[in-house]
Each structure stands twice: as C-alpha cells, then as structure tokens.
Image 1 (cartoon, one colour):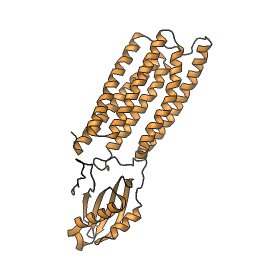
Image 2 (spheres, rainbow, N blue to C red):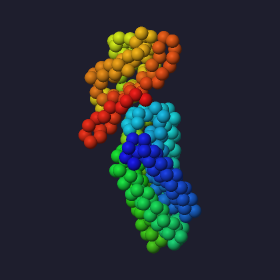
Image 3 (cartoon, rainbow, N blue to C red):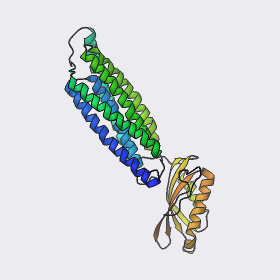
Image 4 (cartoon, rainbow, N blue to C red):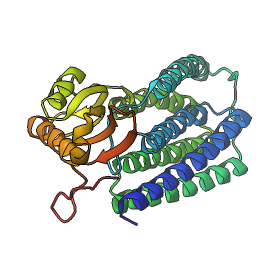
Length: 319
C-alpha cells in the first residue's frame, strides 16, 4: 500500500471519502443551526466549510494530470485560484453578517431584552451534535493514521484541519448545553469568537495551499532551451515549462526536435540534458517530448529523482 501508484490511489480515495463526509456533516450543521437559530453553530459551520475546502484543494492537487508521481509540485491552475477567491469573499460576507447579528443579540442580552433570534435547544439537537462529533473524530483519526502510513503531507494537513473542527464542535456543544441551562448569552459570545477564529483558520489554510495554487516558473524557459541546444543532435527546443523550487525539487516539461542522424542516441541526449540541468539546479524530474525532422512524435518520460527508498535515490527508466 506504500508503493507509488498504489499510495496515490489510496490517498485519492481517502481524500474523496473525507470530502463527501465532511460536506454531509456541513449540511447537517447548517440545517441544525437554521432550525434552532444557533449563531454559534452557524459560525462553527464556517470552520467545517474551510475543512471541506482544504480537502478539495488537496484532492485536486493529488489528481492533477501533469503531476509527477510521488511528488507535490507547486502549480495549480486558475480554477483552484478562482475557487479560493470566491470562498474568501463568501466567508467575509457571511462572517461580517454573523458578527453584526451577534453584536445585536449580545446587546439585547446584556440589557435584559428579549432576543430577536432566541436559540431553541433540546435533547435531539444535543444528540445530533454528539453523533457528528463521534463521526468527525473517527474520520480525523483514520486520516491522520493513513497520512502517516502513506507519508502524504496533503492528507495529514486535511486530517489535522478536521480534528480542529471536532474540538470546535465540542466547544459549541458545551455552549449549547449552557444555553439549555439558561445562559442565553453564551451562544452569542461563542459565535463572535468562532467567526474571529475562522479568519485565522482561513489564513492558515490559504497560506499552506497558496504555493500549490500559483503557477510559478522555476527556471526561465530560455535558459533551459540554451542548455538543451548545447547538446549535440538537438536542433530545436520549445514549449518549456518548469514548476517547483530550485534546490528542493523542480518538474520540467520540454519538447525537443532531434536531427535524424541522432535518433538512435536519443536516450543519451535526454540523459545528457537532464544531467546538466541537475548539476546546475539540483533535484529535477524532466518529461521530454521528442520530435524529429520527419514529424514523428514520441513521448519520453525520463525521471531524474524519485522519493528516497531506504536512504537512496533510485532512478526511473523511460516510459
């Protein structure tokens, strides 16, 4: 289960399952908050929404079609960036409205006036939140265990966010028990606190995911083209893309045109180009698309570095 393709498949399955269960839990919380008029439960739902969002980004990152196997490479597309901006805008709008309503409720509670949105707490709500807590906790613990087994940082981050959401749900559950005992102001105070915490949680999630959201050019294409043309037999180099961090890991894609007289030594050519790039920029993985003057297209995938196995770097062959 810890081998490359199998590990990726297991990570995708866990993240996919976590995403749908988290979305289901989110719908339960929002429905319960709307039915009981609990501002604290509605504010806590923002944290569950953030957890679902983080899981979705991690899933998209793992399922990216041009991601090298076994590596997390910087560079999501415009779609994920747009989703992030929409989520931040929604959180800002919803959080501001919750703060305004909570402030009005708190002012009315301190003056002894009747609340505009009184919370209706009962045993069914407590039981429902108890089931939600147990389900979320079990899902988070499974995610943390699998992240350790699969050595997947995206899976570990999503599981950690889910575990934080569990503790906040327990906090809301305790607050609702206090409201049931007559402390009506407790729901409002918790709502304000949770909205403020949601701002910090959103920042942490975006700060972790942001490098994976932005298409970054690690090495200038003209520099890579110059390196490729230095090797004998290469007549042209085009459509060059590079992502990652120089010195840590860079994933490169490039198209080459090889002179017909050198087609039999194409393997040596790509090894030579990759070797020069690695000597200059550190760990790299390069995908070569080789085209000759007769316009016959072949796909060469030559990987220079794969994750360490027993403390040694193994080389991948051509695919």
